[in-house]
Structures are given as structure tokens and as C-alpha cells.
Length: 483
Image (cartoon, rainbow, N blue to C red; front, side):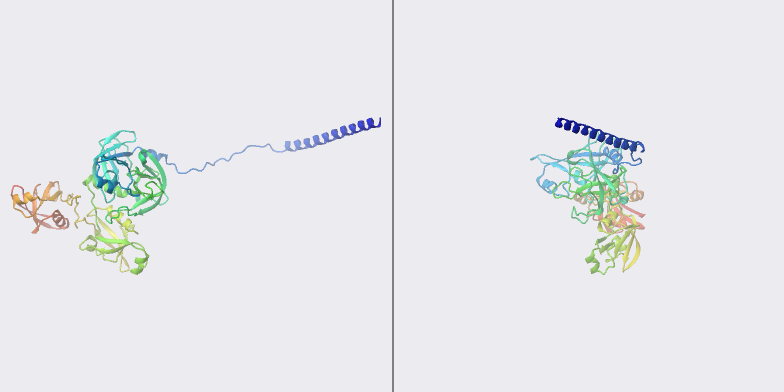
């Protein structure tokens, strides 16, 4: 009986304890609910006025450029020695795709940039030089045969043309205004992957990588880290506005493919070279008449130079443009017109953009004194007339093209030497009554043996000139007029 009562008592006490605990917990819960009910309601929030961080937008520039960059396929007749010299592995120069088949034509591919609506295309000289066949494919897949208008190995540029109208084209930008760190796009056809666009920044300017190893060539590249590969050669380098600021020409690589460094010919060089090729069929190159070099710490110490700014004049050609202007060995050139120059590549770039006869102002340090000298640039023969690639003259002032007479003409006309006018247009000579076909034997009583003889005298002559000659029918002729 006692056990039963004890059990009932324990059960009752447990029940009472449970009820008490429940009510206590319920009160606490009620207090918590009351606390939250008295608070402001919870709201979800979002920050306004902020946008995700993005990079520059290249879509407009790509759209403007991609339709004006073409795919160029060239064919070369198979020659062992030529292939070994030109197509052999070179991490800098071997910059467009090629396939070689035994005793079969070599097929190569590169890129080009339309610069006019009537089919003029700029590309690299090494893309089309000596090709037996050139085929151009537009971005819309239309294909055309192309002809070479002119080439310039000194800047690795070439101009070709297709017969079509109303084509999309890229406008020139000012490469002088390009800044290091600026975003750029490279557009071309790497590995035959047509219409490829890559982006990067300008890493350096006026870069000389000694790609040709020839002091007569001009290397003043825009260096970028935009990815380009074999097949990009001749393609466009454009700014974010879609303006042409360079023509891609080379990569620095130990593998033959992109490893971080690419180089483009500045558009201001391209514009001048292409203008010459359109107007004259060849480049009109101007010369200062000096040898020059960069200034480094060793040269500065050897010549007691106060600083390393400018370009050092190593030697001056006798009777050249610089000697006539009073420049001497040891002078330092610091500016051309208003543009500062601090390296040989910068100086070359500024001069290659000029023509014979152009007048420039040089700022030089002469005997530790800064001074300015005015100078008239000359051609390779020491004159100011326009020269053809073969050394013959074709100038707007003279209006004539010359060539030396053949041995047959010497025998037929009884001449020891002479220079023949093979083409005559409006100019000084036609204005004096000279007719095409005249063989010039003497100028100012000096015997004419070569084209250079004629151009040197007529290019430098000021005042009255006397020309003696004979026509192919044997008629003697004499002309006196002013230059």
C-alpha cells in the first residue's frame, strides 16, 4: 500500500513540475514575441547607384575594324635557296603561315588593312614580296586577285590593290599621340583563323629590335602585349576609337608563337610610305647626311657630355645636307622641328616621314651651346628631286624619267655616253621645249654618263642651266632655261 501511495505521489509531483515548467517557458516565449513585436519591421535592402566594375568596351572599335581587315594568301614558286633564306625559322621575321611541298609552290598567308573604299590595302613587304600570285579574301568571304602597287623593304611595308568599290576601310590615327599604357586592339588572321581580335596595352614606343640588322632600315615599333601570331602579319593595330595606329609586323619569341611581345609599324610612317607608293610607285626617302648613334653612359663619359639627352652625331657626309647647314661631328641633335628625339630610332622615324626637298629645323647642342639650324633634306644622290627605285629620276619639278643609253644607241649615234629621257610629263624640262627621247650628253658643259650625274646637277642647280643633247634621229639640240 505504501509503495502504491509513493508511486502516486511521485507521479503527481512530476505532473505539477511539468505544468510549472511549461507555463514558465510559455511566459518567456510570450516575452520574446512581445519584444520583437515592439521592434521596427525587418526590410531587405539593396545599394543603388553602384554598377559592377568593367574594363574598357572594345565592341565599337572591333566592329569598325574587323570588316576592313583582309586575309591574304600568297603563292611562291619553289626555290630551295629562296625558301632557306626567306622561310627559314626566324623568331622575329618568320611571321606568316607557310606550307612547303616537295617541288610544289609555297603557299603562305597573312593579313592586310583596307585604307580606301576603292581597294587599296596596306600590308607587310614580307607578306607579298616576290609572290607569283596574291589572293585577298574579305571578311564577308568575297575573294579577289590582287596586284602589287609598290613595296618598301626599308620599313617592311607594301601596298596592294583589288578591283572593287564601296569597300569598308580603316581611317588613320595619329601614332604620335599614342601613349604607353593605352588600350589597343590587334585585328588579323592568326593561323588562318580569320577575323580575330585581341586586346592589350601599348608597352613601349620607338622600339628598335634589330629585326633586319641593317642600319639603312627604319625600326621604330610600337610594342604591345596584344596577342598576335603567325598570320597576323600586316594586320591592324587600332585604338579604342577604331583608328589605325599601326600595322602589325613582328613578334619576339623563342618558339615562333606569341610569348608576350609584339611590334607594329606606327601609322604616321605607314601614311607617308603608302602616300609615296600611290603617288610615285616607290618611296621618296630623305637623308640628313650624317651617321649618328644613341648616347649611353660610356659615350657621355668619353666625350664629357653633361647629360644623355639627344642623339650623337658620329660623322658628317661631305657636301651633305647637314654639312651645308653647319652641323659637325660631335654635335647632339635634341629636336626635329618641335619634336624631341632621344634615340636613333626616334630620329629615323622622324626623317623617314619626310621627302627630299623638305625643310626642317634641328635643335642641336654645338660646343655646349644650344642652337637651331635650318636644313633642306636631300635624296640619296645629294639633290632634292624625286628618285625612282632604280636610281632614275621622276620629279614633279622636272617631270621626267631618265635612263642610261644602251650600247646599241652609243654605236648608232656615235656617243661615248648619255642619259635618255624615257618619259616626259608637265614640268621644267617640257616647259623649256625639250621632247621625250632626248639623250642628254652634257649639262653646263659637264659630260653626263649616269642618271645620278643628271639628277645631282639638276637637283642642286639654281639659276640658268644649259643642256646639250641629241635625239634618236641624230638631230642635235640645245636648251637654256632657269631652275
